[in-house]
Amino acid sequence: MRIVIVDRDAPFRDRLRTLLVSQGHQVAGEARDGLEAIRLTQRVRPDVVLMDMDLPAMEGLAATRRIHEAVPTARVVALGECPDRRHVLGAFEAGASGYVLKSEGSERFLRLLERVARGEPVLTPTVATSLLRDGGAGERPKSSVSDPDSLTDREAEVLERMARGVTSNRGLAAALEVSENTVKFHVRNVLGKLGLHNRAEAVGYALRSGLVRLSAGDAELGGLRQVS
Image 1 (cartoon, one colour):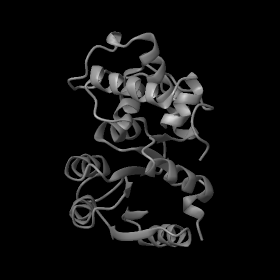
Image 2 (cartoon, one colour):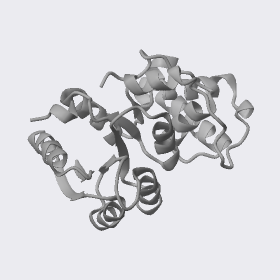
Image 3 (cartoon, helix red, strand yellow):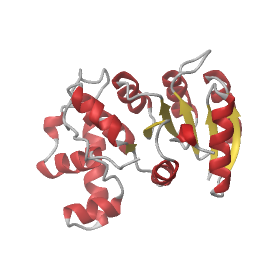
Image 4 (cartoon, one colour):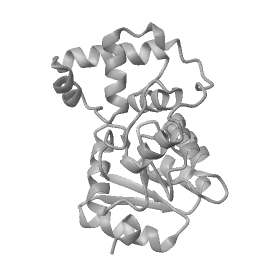
């Protein structure tokens, strides 16, 4: 996996690079701020961008949105110090495929990274707990999203499963006891009816709009800060 690391803290970048390289991943480049991250991602076209939310020059949310638009094949994983609700929901809305705290354990972080590389949005339990504590629901996204009432019961169930962390075709098929082709059909309908582009946007919409309320046990258990 080719990865770009974006963080203002050089020692943290060093620790993260060491962890990734030890697992056979290629660090294609590093950036210290949002503007540098955009230029680097456009140049090296990585598989994954690990994006710090607290950056100089351009904040992580804005950089994530720009990267998602310019290099849609690059999956952005937001890295945060705390489960700030605005950053979590904003990251998904900006096109991020996941939100991971910098305090996550290295083994769990690597598992989450593999899930992101497979195209699965990820949300860790501490973040889910924060969303629940803050009410889980917020204002509807300011976008052209269609009426969620247009979803069938089965499509609404698919959306709920995705928001709770079951995002792969195989996982959804097993949970719903249907074929993977049927899952693909339902996911395509969900995205089409809601005017969304991918599963990460669907997860962000479900959480932000309050269509799905998470509990602490709903997400994958995920410190990077302690990586040696």
